[in-house]
Amino acid sequence: MWGSIRKIFTNIYRGKRKRGARVAPRRDSYSQSEYETAIAAFSEAREVWRQVGDPRGEADALIGLGKTHQRMGNLADARWAYESSLHLYKEMKDEDGYEEVKEYLAALSALE
Figure 1: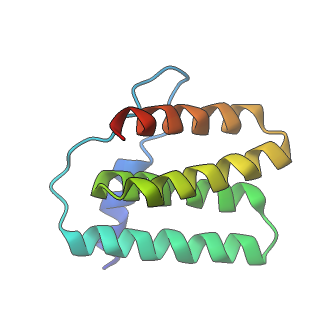
Figure 2: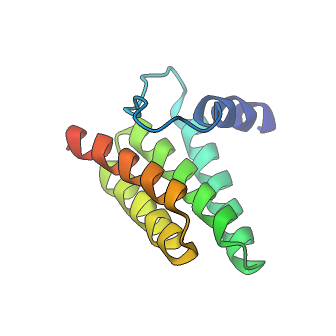
Figure 3: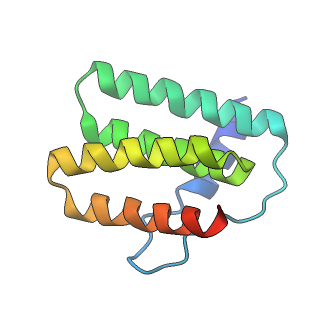
């Protein structure tokens, strides 16, 4: 299980993308169960970060959740995750995080 999660996390988090970089989803050959595992892990991580009061960790987990949903084609769920992350970055006054998520939302809008 952790090998699958690591594989998906590595693909999703290949380092922070530079502003203006392509953020459209790649078509990967992961199985449905691997995506479901990633969604469960990101959801659990989000809850842990929320409980310990770390909005940045929560926002990052939401981005991972959004990217995973987007790659699965669950665009409404991806939008919810990105917008939730955007709200947290706005509250933290994190302009870089805010702008990054706006790029993800723009790419998502192009798919809808």
